[in-house]
Image (cartoon, rainbow, N blue to C red; front, side, top):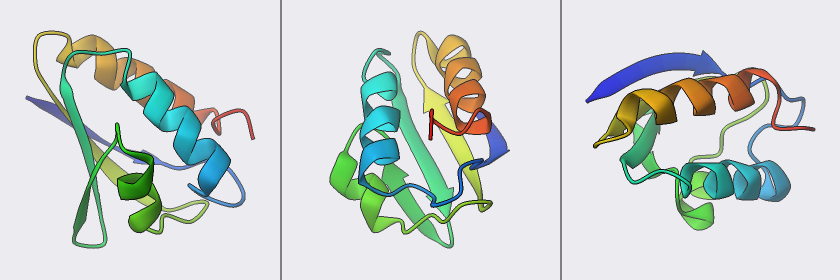
Length: 87
């Protein structure tokens, strides 16, 4: 298991479009991918779970990846979150 805190670098946060992009990217990996924010743990492969976390732009989440490709998954997802999910 690997984890890292990362700032969500888009203005609006994880609303529908960036939540969908995060989920699409997370689904490319075999690892279990979750994140924690404000005492809520969300499944990064579920749009409803991501939306339910109510993450706003500039908030910091802790990404957790567990599985055979966990290192690659964490590195990739941190990168796309820091780049603002193309928003």
